[in-house]
Length: 498
Image (cartoon, rainbow, N blue to C red):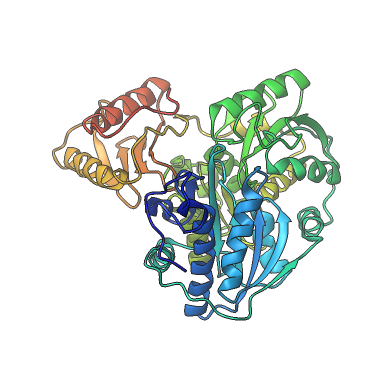
């Protein structure tokens, strides 16, 4: 295959013939582009050929499970990818439309080593991408993505004989059976199932009904135009809609899923939006009673309560704060033998004996229902109020181009580290330390903190702040972090703010 060219030139003869790929689409651990502005279908075929080449290079058996999310262009993307995989001599097992965790499940169910899930995840329409892995339950990490990028962009792909195609039916049913197991609610539970018309619409309502939960539907009709909002349970627009549904229906809670079903958002019975890191603490409290002295992983965007919560300390919990990102988190959970990993974005990584270690919004929903079953006298708002009080921002993302964001972040980290070294305060308090494992998490002397990092999959920086003291302090932390960010003219407007 010809070496891909960049930039992508639409509406040309070559656009319909030759691979065109914008290099920035090869991100930390996902491949993600605007389609067709940043990649064309021959470019997707080159990606498939590159992935197949990489599998052969690494000695991975040449078999892969492939699926696609529910967007109007995802099927054509998947077919172009499959063409490249088959050219590389890979045996393709196509499981049809799916949520990402169903594709990960297929690796186990069909006993295949590799997976390629065509999805733009929670990104809005106009984006596409591929989540890939060849060591279950992991998805590829930064070094593997760099290797794949070089194979594809340098024209190092290699065609081989032996490629084949098979459509495998029945995986959706097996996935739902696996999620349900023999669990059935005895407690009466009424749940708003919010899917934003995305892929999870084909799974969520049926799953809840099978475990004996009364379902209040919320945008559960499949519609790839996403007429109400982009399904993303980290976005306040979706969370506010979930809250309104709870209040209107008198439900016990709302559970919401993103565009590819690997994340879960929670709103309690009072309509209060509980950010996913706090839900993680609630789950960790419950699980650490069953599994004392458990180890949990939390991403750097998450609440400081994982380290300071008295209940977790009492139950002997060890917590490891790690890099944000589903591939980084999955790898860390496996590496240190953690029981679970929690990410503020709503990715949860439940390992054996609860789950298989990959992020599955549906599995989390079932486990939250089990948690409610184990705490029959508690509402979700009771569980929320039982946590020590903190004030935290949503995840806020100011624009910064993919080509600039990492160098901009380097300078911001340097400025924040220098602020600490000079003994300068932030939000009127002393800085205790600056953790630089993933961007800069500036921790104050009372445990409050502010974070700035680069988004792994969109042209943005990411900012999160939390105060253990007050809303006013949270706002002051954000103001001071933002003041440092505003010293960089290449940083643009926020997607949402406080």
